[in-house]
Image: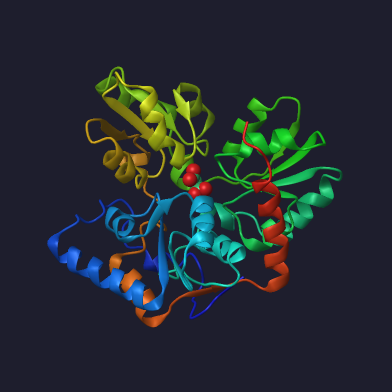
Length: 336
Ligand code: CIZ
């Protein structure tokens, strides 16, 4: 993996907003958004924004969604360039699935602690300790790690992927919370989980959610499977970000939903369901569940990315081929 014009990923000094609210969508932003859309037209670029991005960045994008849906959307787009407002592994997966398009990540510091928790070397080492196991790797991982895996998964299809495997022994990497949840649903397999976690989800405790629920009696709890077990045990729905928006339809009588995932998803939920109330589950010391990396990219960064063609994501062809195979195997698995 290579990022042009790059300083190291996870450049903490570049953090802009750890626990701050994303900026409001103002009239000044409207001009900037128009400029961005014009630039995208001139560059023949498609702008993709992950569900965890700030509201204005989601609103300027041509497509908003989860990482896999966006990478697949890019395949259909009549565009030469992809500007991926997300974190590095997402832009990298988009490059792997769209080798003929130039892919740009608008902020070079937008990494992912979970993806960084496992390297190609540590996976190689882990595999030697578990011969005969099938390696299932969550999409939140580098292309190098994907290339060393038998198959990938997302939070939307992890259970189906593990269930579909012919063998019974599985190494699940890198998210231990997601892996534990999968094991619970697929008891016929023996799932060994790697010791990684997303800090933005793992920070949340059941006691915080219970406390918040006291103020919202009757609220439906929707949690992401990257959350700890105590959260998942009290959740009414456990699903990926894309599914969260749709799950609301199952509760026509419910006004309030308590959401346990990164705060960016609230933007899409509120847009889809303006008559409902969405409350973030509290994290540590009163912080909302913000991923600092997801909140790095601003509208100015998107404009700069288009104007200056920065920061281009490159994946060496051999790694890309291995990663693509693991992703394609995942895409061939029918959903349960
Ligand atoms: O797959 C994704 O985009 C992630 C990281 C989470 C989700 O549930 O959408």
